Amino acid sequence: MFVKEYDSLMKDGRVSDAAPLLQRRMVSDARAEKLVKGFAERAPALIRANVHNAIRNYAWDDARRQAAILNDVSVGQLLPAKQIAELRDLDYTIDAAADEHVYTLIIRNKPACQDYINAYLTRAPLKTMVSNVEAYRQYLTKIAGPLDLTLSLSGIRWGSRYYSNVYSYRNDITVKYRGEMVISCVHVKSKADSESRDLGEGAITGKLQESVTLDVEIYNKYGTAWTSRGNGGSGSWTGTIEELRRGVSIDAKGDGFTNKASFSISGLPMEPTLPPWHQ
Image 1 (cartoon, rainbow, N blue to C red):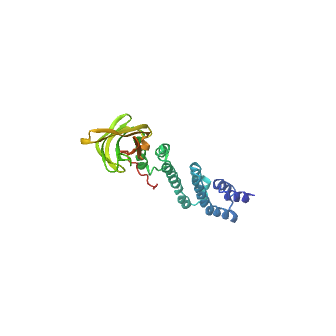
Image 2 (image 1 turned 60 degrees about the horizontal axis):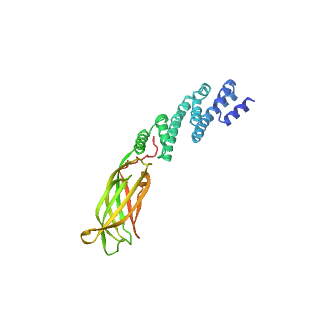
Image 3 (image 1 turned 135 degrees about the vertical axis):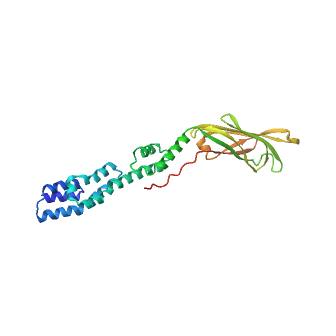
């Protein structure tokens, strides 16, 4: 009955329960010596398997309980000191796995990863990646606040019906950000179905998820000494700076034509690289 119960416990990996049971029934005979020897042969592999199974399930407390079996008096008396010493690396194995897991959650969920960053900085066992995580935390703090940026009028694609493909206009262009003029370009030469590039830039401020407006107005000049003046099209855009960072085009529509103004922004904080976890 005892042997059957003992074998059942060992098969289930319940080393901490099997050890005291074996100790209570130990007698100086061949069968007892065989069981003790078998325990020393089987228990280390069972302990490691239990720990790694808990790690695979991200059950860190359970993994540490399994590793702590080495501190059990009965287990310590039945295992040679060398085997116990070899199993002590399980504590570091658990800490490394837990540390890597939280760090991986940061990478997987960025930029919406502030909770995981806080968890890593406060509770990660090893904090081997603390400098990288702290740099990313500072980056998130910066981009969450108002940003001083540069808005660029990257170019205007002049419509195919804008005057003609033979003659050209001179154009005055204004760009307003939230109702305030930030870019002014004068005497920009245009030709139908062509493009003018890098026309001007201005300073803007705002948060990434804040709703902002851009208004573009174009007035053309033509005739002798460019004294005649006409409507070169106008248009508006409303969106977030987050959208603006990916580039925005505004249709500046006039009487029978459409000129397309393209915008970009610069000056955003550079996102730090989060390298693979390492020890």
